[in-house]
Image (cartoon, rainbow, N blue to C red; front, side, top):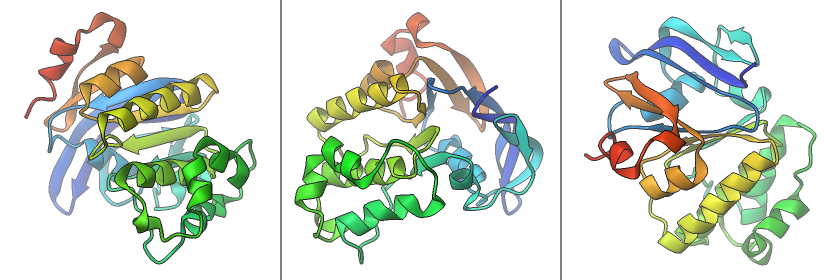
Length: 231
């Protein structure tokens, strides 16, 4: 039973239809990439899960249960943590306060403040600093750490490599693979070919608001994948 499944989802902003029958699924401990050019609806998938867009047709399932009324808190309540594009660091909170926001759901699990700070020692060192005083790479660590504090079963990351130096992307790839091996499902919404190939096991290509292609990354070259992403 998938942790998350979109079944023929048509989603709208007002009257504008952005998703046109999107179907995909992510299982426990599975690392899946959702790829495509800018403007094809990748971020709309996240916004639909968060209740920002309206579903006109189709439905979303979490662990086999159809969710009819998606709200901003639905994903978190159901063990899904989202690292939004832009990271969403709250500027008026310290690094540690930003991390502690992840505990709001009250879910129990292996991740604690101490464990996240062990994973990202810079967050312990800078715990009293404003969240936005960190570098781009450190802010991404903070955003991921905050998500892990929710002890999720599924981690969704929207363009996590954006603005990061290659060495930080390398570290991010290793971390996401390790999280998947530890049993956390990963949905990676990304355009960085190198990161996709190093992290994901399967992929879905979005085009014009629908899934145009899917399969195992073992059977797809970087050049073949890049033709779906190049602007």
